[in-house]
Length: 147
Image 1 (cartoon, rainbow, N blue to C red):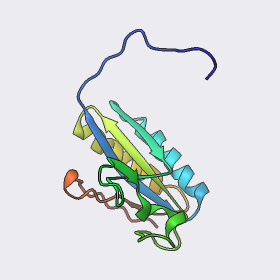
Image 2 (cartoon, helix red, strand yellow; image 1 turned 90 degrees about the horizontal axis):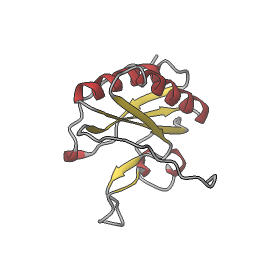
Image 3 (cartoon, rainbow, N blue to C red; image 1 turned 30 degrees about the vertical axis):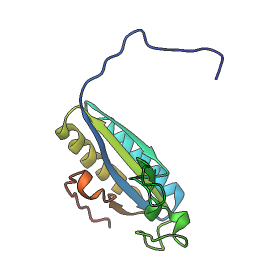
Image 4 (cartoon, rainbow, N blue to C red; image 1 turned 180 degrees about the horizontal axis):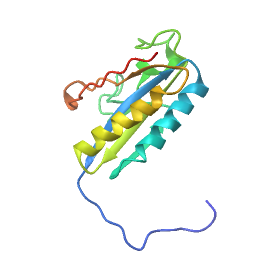
């Protein structure tokens, strides 16, 4: 948007693992954001992965539009709890989705563990969970108690 177009002279592609994810449920927007930032700082220490977070989590497909590849995960939107079937409790005010991609499954698993541990160190985090993608993904559960 500055009037210039920049592109790398060289870049490469390779097969990898996409879509490792977890959700941070927090009592405030500030604590959710801080937890997401902390998670990404931890994820950056793991080689061969890339992580990002989103304030509007995604789910596979849609209720109204059957051809939709992904839509907003309304069951985990704190601002929609009165308007949709929710998966979050009343004390949850904000949810961030952490997404991790990497070269190998073991890289993604390690990054998820580190990211979750860093997120749970943040005051105000109430729960760490994952969206249910049914048969599309096989998710290995990681359970943390937040005290």
